[in-house]
Length: 152
Image (cartoon, rainbow, N blue to C red):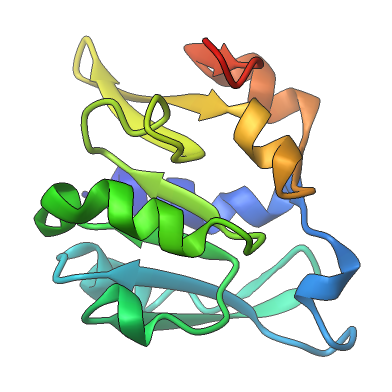
């Protein structure tokens, strides 16, 4: 769990959000968790600055409660509603992260996977591009798979 946490907290250093995601330069950077997950317990201490902004951690019990955030981790309990959740978030510039199977194939942006007991990730760059989220080349180079075409 702690590696998933660390991964979520470093993402702001490798991704550029559209200017419309922040109302001013002092806005907080918001990492949120949808559903119940132990990751929230681990995220609370990580409130230091990332990409020049103070991090705020939020938890939302359901998709209907999700307000502004920049990274949204979908807990395993949300798997049955994955399509509905991703569709509901569709127009918003939010990096969605989960360890759910087929997450990037279903429209999620970053899927965490374990390969030989190590945390790795896949990126749906096509979806990120649609939302005007710019994923840095260093992060793309570290991914085990990068989906660049929305029809892959």
